[in-house]
Image (cartoon, rainbow, N blue to C red):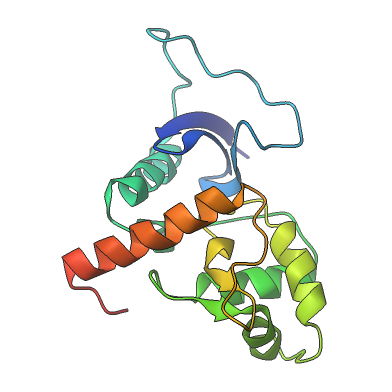
Length: 172
């Protein structure tokens, strides 16, 4: 069992990534994470040496912010959660970049059409928010709803994806 972590500088702040056997287990902006995080290395210090799999996760996150908004679809994830949460997170992962789905639509996708509030709770507990793109989940009326990283980040992610899907000609 290999556990690794690293930090990625993004346009929205420093992200902390934790991997377990090459699969992303946690991802959070350092300024919003509820748990204490080991401080990133000082500039010029050597960061953790990552396995090949860990480096692929880190590079996918960097690629996402660089414009390959589908890069995170290609990495493995291993978030800790209940069966219901994992089902919700998998359904969210299937929302294509540049598109959105409502909490109600996710509830229907997991076979629990009346559980849209539970979907909201599961979404809020998503430990790998960038790879399980909960920023793509919105209210039924099209409003943004909430976002643990701050609504400014949710707006940024959605706009970033729309711009790069359009530029790259992707329609997935």
